[in-house]
Length: 564
Image 1 (cartoon, rainbow, N blue to C red):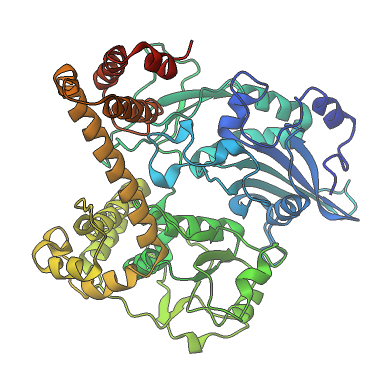
Image 2 (tube, rainbow, N blue to C red; image 1 turned 180 degrees about the vertical axis):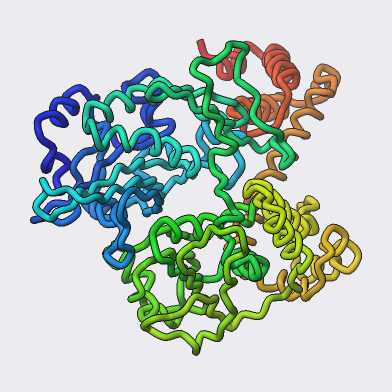
């Protein structure tokens, strides 16, 4: 699958103008640096009679993909034969980067992620693929059909933004091909960085997309976007209400009766197979499921669209060990047979967008699974710990009867899930320097448990016990421990800076003064790297204290601490 296969003269000319070899985040000021803050690359996948799916183009052409990554992108960019997608369709996938982190810039929290919610930070070891696929009759092609996909590869989970971008770019690209694509890449290379908390205007193809990049400081009640800057934008911008949030109500319409049970399965990191009629339904359902834990980061693996050709097919389908903690979206019924040992399988049918609530999938025992012609349903032996909130379903049904807009229904549903997650997490959050003790925590629930903030009844203790064994508890604990340690260091630095350093130094030895200088310097470096929540006034005072402490030492020590 050579990147130049079938490219033709036009694409080859376009490539000649694109940068020098690179394999990751580019340094500021270098070619394609701004582009790489949003996208890794843009791919074009076409159907070749001899090769099958083939990678026709990659922009910028210097972006390096392994053969395994190229193969995965090719297979995941086309619906499989069971979907029968005619016309235009959009969906997404997520693949593991081969060979670990090739770019040091992706290790840990990068500058662009500072202030971003944990669930919206860049993926250090995975790529997201956002796909616009077109299949139309074309008598000029041997097979009788034009089949091509335009794919945006990114580390950002901004599905709403990139779908909107593809909706503008792909139809034009399918008509004009490479020259159009190169122009779009150059426009993206002029975009400002996706800094958390900012509202940005992003021009592309004569349209301005206006987006707000979420930050940790945002509240669920944040209002509509305010225009950025004081200028009047011409043409009027297309305002996206979110860069990442899907229409949750539309995605969950067939499973609204089981939203809380599915929320529990996500919270516990349970393996779940989602079998859908198309990659669009599959990927949206998986992304909706993994987003329903916010503000908790989804710490397990998930694949919005997955095929039997994926390089990890054997890893996910092995029976020699327990099913992995992964949410897998598929369209091939073959997976029902291959993964019938999985504990939870959700089969959804074709979406129906009429005014009435579609027929809800039924809870069924796994033994009811048939390898062929499995009917829609949630096949699981799991018993929910919490009682179903019937008031929520009644409220959503009433909204349908009153023809309430889908975005309002989504807001109701999202708020319910947010409050449910927060009610579960709040009892866990008081800072504890000592190790977390599960028994002590469970005993504290009677006086400070989720019943204080949530009306739902049920076996909360049993849910917490299972949660402690899930990857999400480990992810939550690590994040909270890191935040707490940083806060304590910041408070310590502030306390030192509020003291009178000259009085403190009077009875201290040179060793103690040098130790203070080194520790202050270390904290200062961390704080300046935005790893500590410290005010600028505190940083200035810390620098002044360091200079004062160094000035109190003998000249030889000063020379060691401040070399020329």
